[in-house]
Length: 435
Ligand code: SF4
Ligand code: SF4
Image (tube, rainbow, N blue to C red; front, side, top):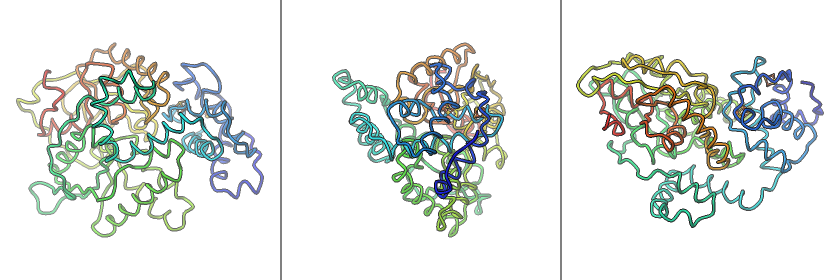
């Protein structure tokens, strides 16, 4: 694609990076074929190629965003399905991030929109705020029909109950049985996940400790920053990124870290991008690059580094049909697809691939709250595809997908790490008590 940035504009590091990406695009439109919003809405501007044009036009012409541009950019799920399909290696993720940040700087959204986005930014990215809202939402649930549509949807979306934690809160969870652990890793426990599904972090810790790996949860790390990053709130995201980088890097230097484990693929994708985000920051670029290099999704880490001890006993003597839902951030964002399925296969269960598995379930961070109509259609399609293959259990590696899918089906859904924990000596997950 031809570009027309001036020399002056190219002094800006973000323009310079985006210009290189625009040049790779050959307008072929292959990406439209796998774009969920293009498939649903059929408008060129609701596909990746059209959005690339919109972003290029704003940046090249120093044009402020307008209502039309914002509508089409906001409809993008950031599922990155287009990046998997693109034959020219266009890094759409960096373009859409740049486009969103430009929108946030140049466009004043209508008040209700600003209110909802800032509410989500403040509530979801701080686990303490989320815990408080989650608590009060339980009382508001029976009266949710009194609230404005957006607020009602948010209240309805909150889980009805929150599982209790079973592991004590500690900074370091030591490896079992050996004085010297085989590895030491930091775990990102996540802002929303640790409130609504603490069992996922607990399964991760138990599983790693059982395989002689020490797990550290450094104080001060809460959100990975992706929520604000994808809302285009660059300054807020940057504060979180910087804090995380400095805490993890300190831990790496002082006590050693072999990996930073993410068990939420949406967060892992952002952590792996810290190096790019701080590429021109003289103080942070080396540290950020190191944090990105250390980051591993739990399935990737287990597959590459751990010889798992599977146990057959009374608790897991049944073989299930497990549908694996490959979260977009996992398969398109991090290019991890076969690894989690191979891990589940090793448990002796049958793994089923979901038809059209490359298409998003509509969760996409805060998308299901901000673009609920499109999200509902994607969810309906996903559930229909899952039900076609008649699984007894669904498994995935992202809390957003778990919450989204669970609201539309009675088939129990587990994080992949809960299955691996269970088959290597951990407890049978609570949601399977009736199976
Ligand atoms: S990220 Fe997903 S929704 Fe956005 S343009 Fe690419 S394929 Fe379409
Ligand atoms: S597939 Fe890649 S090169 Fe082709 S239009 Fe889409 S982004 Fe551009």
